[in-house]
Image (cartoon, rainbow, N blue to C red; front, side, top):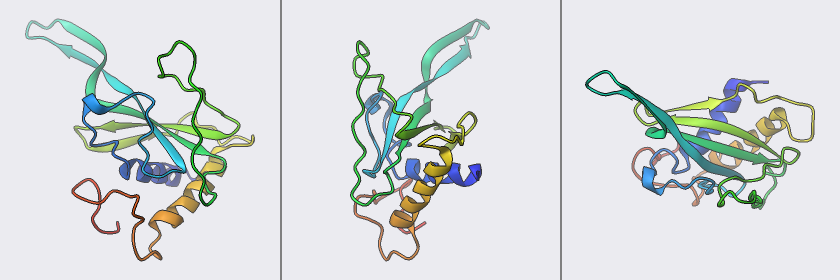
Length: 175
């Protein structure tokens, strides 16, 4: 399994979404922010904040670091099919729309962190088992390669209209 290629392709999807530049007040846990219909990207929360005051007192605030942002990327077993649109997830009861019901036989979920200060992604590949079941990391990598060719191949004359165009961090030219 080529984990570096896997992470590179996941990062490409994150880069073409608004994930890195959405204002913290506008990030909604569980909301799909993917720019492509075949893949789902959801905001999962902020990092924890650990700090000290002038007197050296330690403070800890869960989800208090808005410069560290967690995202989940879902790749469905049919994401490589033409005209596929990622199906809605069921929401767990009593979670106020926050906790979606993951379908491990149909989709692979990968987590990533964006560090706003470093302007860098960290795709969490540790713990993603290549597996032998119906939806595996190996199959997800093949699907990501198909999507890469479909949307970002150098053979294509133009970027798809659904991809954002404009100022940094979105390209105005093909990467």
